Length: 172
Image (cartoon, rainbow, N blue to C red; front, side, top):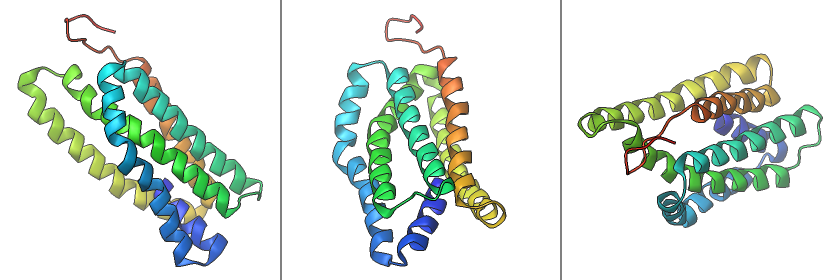
């Protein structure tokens, strides 16, 4: 939802394909540049906590955009800055998420867990885009950002309740 609504917002604010491309570039650049660093951090620190932190940042950016749009104070530089912040969060959250999967399932079930993870990721991209279109048409851009922010609450609650096996066999 965030991606569709944000692209719509950028075009609505600027009427410029340049800014549309710049927004996507600034959102992807931190992922390109810092995912390796995020992987190193995920290997050396608590992956669950790192992932929760990433989710908090992404939730905050979604709610910030919702508020800026709702109150009519959004400017293109807000969108670009928040897009970049989201990219940084994803650069650290992505590797933590990927490396957390082996801690959650037994080695014999790992191929199925990876396949299910890929399915849920791609399904969320499809359903998120579809939901964004319907939400944009019915209630507007701010609602898309707010609903996306609420989706992070669900993930954060699930992560807080997660028990992760450590290498020594204990759970955290």
